[in-house]
Amino acid sequence: MKRALIILLLAGIFVSLGYIAWHEHAHAHDLSDANTADYALRGFLGVRTINCEYQFSPSDHHAFQLTALRFEDGKVIEKGGGTFGKIDTLPSHKLKMEFMWGDVNGKPHTTLIMPGMSAGSPDPFWQKLDGGWASLPNDLAQHYNDYLILGFAQSNLGRDGSTNNAFGADFPDALKSQKYVGAIALKLFDTVDQAQNAFSSK
Image (cartoon, rainbow, N blue to C red):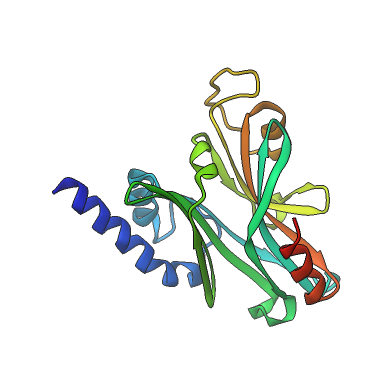
């Protein structure tokens, strides 16, 4: 009975995400937000969320790619999962996205939600990220090569084999100290074709 209740609650969260992705809020974990109870329930059920809004400037390129980067010992081991598109098709030139990961019926699952689209996949890598996580709005976004990091999560397991529960919301420090790090990354392109080709390439 308890397991069935948890599954039903988790299903309810995913059904509500279409509304949540559109809802205006300044920060994913702002305690004044009306969705505080929803985020608390997700945390109780082990569902973690990176929720960001990124405002493009007039000087930005014409197209974007949003993808997940997976790191081990500070190096990219895989990238993929995400979307691409034209900046001028976004309302007010603002990118809104929510990335979630957790267990669904005992299996690892990730979901990316943006207004008008949703994509999910089984991705066991994110289950390794049992440490802290952060969403990084415009003024806090951090760079990695040609990518802008909009949010990331890390493992408690350190690169030296120790367990470290400390979390400073600093992406470069996480890469230096933690065994596993996952990031939601934004990259700009001149054309949609370039963004699509980069999204498709390994």
